[in-house]
Image (cartoon, rainbow, N blue to C red; front, side, top):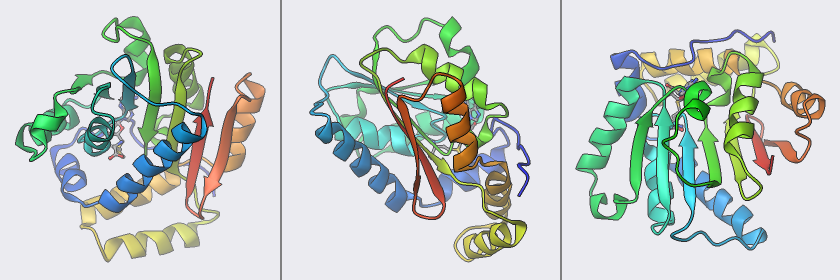
Length: 230
Ligand SMILES: C[S@@+](CC[C@H](N)C(=O)[O-])C[C@H]1O[C@@H](n2cnc3c(N)ncnc32)[C@H](O)[C@@H]1O
């Protein structure tokens, strides 16, 4: 199936509310556990000196879980959508875990502009994104960003949807989604599936752009992971 790009930022209020109100907690908990396993394998334990950055953080579900899992680190969630950042800050303010979230802050910025800002004072130890890559129109913008934000201590972990093989498979996934989520979210999910990249596209990009230190692999039938040091 040909890739059909979608807008990068999720800026419409209704879209943001639908996304925020959906329960993705099972996948989010799995993601945190998976990152933890990778860090353990590398003998990395994160502490006060460490900075974790969550790119395309949306309403902050994953940023919050990162901040709770590694309470002594500093966690920064970044999103280019003002509406999403307002939502993330609101969620933080009403969280029952608010006391545990003192190490978390949000920044509204397009990922392509982060390098020109100086709001990240430390080197990043863990650079994470979930469901971001498919929003980025040109792969080089995503990889240039993670390259410019990474140093030799940075572990990258980026998870995203994988583009289905054909339209029929995309429509089947859309139908499954519609049994759990509302129409706005279902349509967004379908647009996301069509905008996603394939394993081949991500691998080709990393191999051709001196990024072969990154592992790119499939997780299950529907997801891709980019993991490692840049
Ligand atoms: C599908 S949501 C994922 C949110 C969150 N990571 C999660 O897993 O719940 C994608 C988010 O990436 C943001 N985004 C897309 N392109 C971006 C860009 N170029 N710069 C910053 N944020 C971006 C969108 O605004 C949106 O909030």
